[in-house]
Image (cartoon, rainbow, N blue to C red; front, side):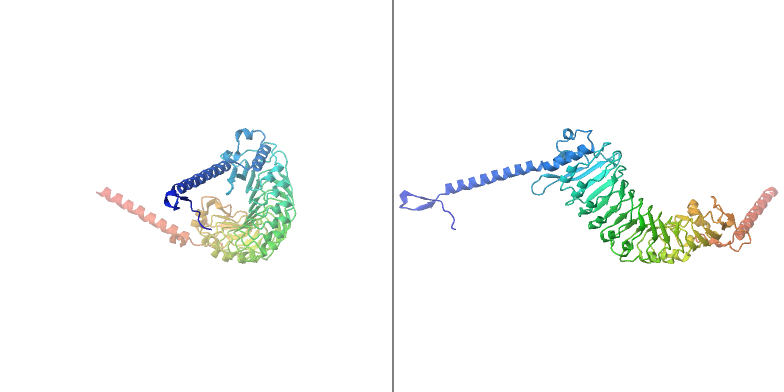
Amino acid sequence: MFPLALTMRNPSASGLVVPLQATTSFLRFCITFFTLLWSSQQLVSFSARAQETNQQDLQALYDVMYSINYEWDWRTLYTDPCTGGPQGIVCEADSVTGVYYVTQMEFGIISSVDNIVPCSYNATIPPSIAMLRRLDSLFFYTCFVNQTLSIPNEITQLGPSLRLLSFSGNSALVGPIPAGVGNLTKLQRLVLSQNGLQGNIPEELSNLSSLLQLDLSGNKLTGSVPGSLSSLSKLVILDLRYNQLSGELPAALITRGFFSLQRMAMSFNQLQGNIPDAFTQLGLSSLTFLDLSFNNFSGVLPPSLGSSLTNLEDLFVSSNSGMQGLIPSSLGNLVNLVRLDLSSSNYSGAIPGSIFKNLVNLRYLGLSNNRLSGSIPPELGTDLPDLFTLDLENNVLSGAVPFAPSFLQRMGRNLMVSGNPGLCYTSVVEIKFPLQLAPCPANSSSSSVAPDSNNSAAAAPMSSRRSQTGISSWVFFVSILYWILDLTLL
């Protein structure tokens, strides 16, 4: 196409055609004016839309707020909770239309400082909650504590966008965990802790491939731990404590998957059978916290636990009365260990002192209420510079307490050795608080004590130091007498 030429024929110029400059300028002005007018209208229209909330979301939000707490007139208090609502309600504008959608809701009591929407005594969850299709986070804190309620199936329809779902401290929240929760495939955190939930852990939870945290602690869940949970390869925290779970610990949980898992807590259940001797670096290579205490496990402590979980910082396998056998020397490979509790689990044999030379980070060691025998390894007092608590009570240990005075002074009452009839102490370890032990016989060959490395004088026999002190005092006394006598003669 050719550009349009606006021309005019001049009659006095024999048909000469000239451009019409004035007409061109006028047209340019008109185009510019109408362009600016259209742009301003679009801007005003977008600005107006940006102050609006999606009507379906707004209605569903009001439904939820009135169902949670009917005592307040939410429509009068907040004409639009998205643009100026209570704490805990978060909305985000669509990047194209500018219309607001509900993305986060928090209800209940977190603390006296947080001012989120409180729950009335008969709080419920309405079916219309399923209409919030862009909801990202949903939290209920100590909300359902009077009138019993189950997790509604509408919650399981929030799958397209929901990443965080939490029901915590709701004692009246009962019934099973809906299998449909497995449809929330975008979920990253599922926290259903300290409620009254019952029934089995649904196998469908293994569909939550994006899950980072699974916390089902503090409920009344029964049945076995699903081995299919091992398919949650992104999981970082698995907390199943304080339930009524039974059966054996699935070997699949420790042999495959769980590449990212850092915390596994299963204490205070009714798990039984042997702890599988199948720990591998491939299965739990990132694990730092393992709690299997207060269950009904039996058999020996698996050696592979110590040889494979080299990143472990906290290991609790206490209060499993069916356990037996020796403390495996492979625990010495857990060089990052900070807390080790093997108390009340029927372990026997000697305490392997050699394992502690590598555990330089250990701060808590609990071996009480077992059947451990033999003498206390001196390494406990020399190889553990950060040790804060040592509990050896109620075993069948014998011989002298082998610790230097500086160690005893540092430990104070955090050293617990009572309940071992064969243990005794020497005068070297007399301290200001009672060890609740009998003194060792004066001629006992078992009364040797580790030298105090912090004081070179401590290596000398106590009787020698006392003799030297006595001689020094006598010389000083005689010198004073001579000085007084010289004064008298003067």
